[in-house]
Length: 296
Image (cartoon, rainbow, N blue to C red; front, side):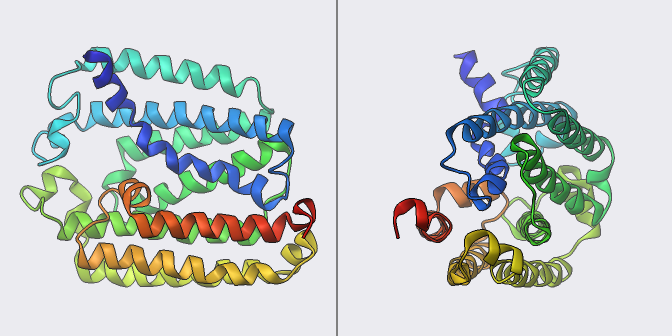
């Protein structure tokens, strides 16, 4: 059925990245505030629409390079299931839905999601072919998700949260490049992604070491920061750091030993140890941050 092809085109599996919108409400201690949570869900829905519109646009632009990729050639447009003109109509519909949902939220949210769209347009047409700037553009997308989630419910964002987001998103972006360079799809690498000619495995491994280290250190420093301790009335958040350490180490294991990483979403949603670790981290954070509400 063609409706399934449209569903594949908007890539709902990638919506897991938009969960970064919920980071501010979680660490603001407002996750159990139903009105604020509903607003955050609306913000999440808006980002799902705009991110899907970007995926549609990328598939339109990359249709020829996708056709020489062993996996991407089966994408709806590259495989010929959906025409470019049909995809363009879907792109317009998704942008319209984004505008409608954003209009229900504060003006600052509209600015943040517009900046996200502009950043991705720049990435699609130019930055994706510029070494280093390509992964920084990916990182900006995650930062804007966090900022948008905060302005949607009018809470402040810790500087440490922004720094942690920068490092973890760089880690994911660089890991993706590493997987593309060392994975099974080595034929016509430059045709698949032009910027790969400016990277090599040794270089990206060095970058990833920095990004992984930065993620761990910035998160650990956030948990013991004065703002975090005052906000949660506890210094126990530091005990959630081992979950972050394990998550990074497990991801590196899958990247280096299993040649995974080309699709970060697939790892996060299909690797059982990472899923369990993420749930345990979330539970530990919830118990520490919301201990008074839970009666602890």
